[in-house]
Structures are given as structure tokens and as C-alpha cells.
Length: 216
Image (cartoon, rainbow, N blue to C red; front, side, top):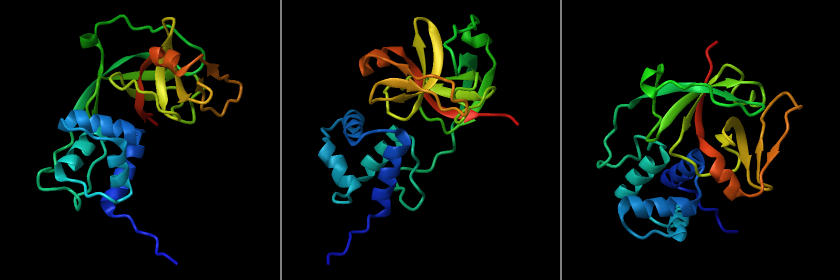
């Protein structure tokens, strides 16, 4: 009986990086091509995941930057020195409905809005919103603050997003089959919002929710 191959720590880290970013192997290949200015295909990433291809130091550094998933100290190449966590100041822009769609309230310039400080968000166009309603209380209860990246509008099934429909905003989880925005709530009265296609949903996306914060 053949012995099952045990994956290296580096291959396991890559699996974790893809899961952390909600990114497919094909998407990572596309992003690596842009980042390293070389041609990458999904098959190359798949070989890295299966531990059948050695990952170079530039690839490790690029994958860390693309996915926002830090390399453990024992795997970090000399070319990737440990950096201090970057502090990002995020404007608390508005309230967002976790229930019925609601028009945005804030008309203030961004420079006049309160700022919240967060570390380890990575690159992006970040804003903070306060949750109203309980349709997402399993992820972010009413009164919680959600941090979303307006630069990340790629829909990944099972991930939470803020979206806008005819000028009104909502906070839900995207599911692709069939295409729909779903609540995540202890209150079962909340309904699912179906859309015609993923392309229609992509036009609605404001940004992907990265973090939730709740003061106790």
C-alpha cells in the first residue's frame, strides 16, 4: 500500500493563504502574473499546493502580499524581512442595513468623519460602517462595526459583502448557486435576495467585508 505524501509546511501555508483570501488557484495565477511580470497558469499554482513544485522566494513574498496571509517566521526567506504591522486609519462612513435595504445617511466629506485605527488590514480602499438590524447577527450583530474593502469587488461564494441596489445599501453573504444575497441570522424571518446573475450582483458590490468589531 502506497504511503500518502505528507505536505510540506510551505504547501500547507499556501493552502491557508488561498482560503484566507477566498481566492481560487486560477485567480492567484493571474495575480502572480501581474505581480511578478511573468506568465503563470493555474496548473503551476496547483503543483505548489500539491507540493510538487518548489516555491521560489519571490513567489512566497508575492503570495503573502496578494493574499494578506503572513508567512510564518520559519518559512520566511531572507528577502522578506518581518515588517511592523501597518496601522490603517479607516473613516467611519455610515450605517448599513442588515435587514431591509436602506439609503446611506452620511453626506459629510470623508475628512470630516471620525477615523478608526486598525492593523494588518493590508492594501485596499477601506471604510467602516455601523450595522443596523439583525439579519447578519451571526457574523455582525446590530451595533457592530464592519470594515470593508471597496477595492475588493470579486465575488466569492460564502463571503460577506456590502452591496447597493438602486441607491440603497445592504449587508449580506454572497452565494453563487443560485445567485443570491443571504442573511446569516438567528432570526429566521429574514428573506434571501435573489438576483438574475452573478454579473448583475457584481454591479451591486460596494466592497467585501474583512473584519467585524463589537464593543462590549
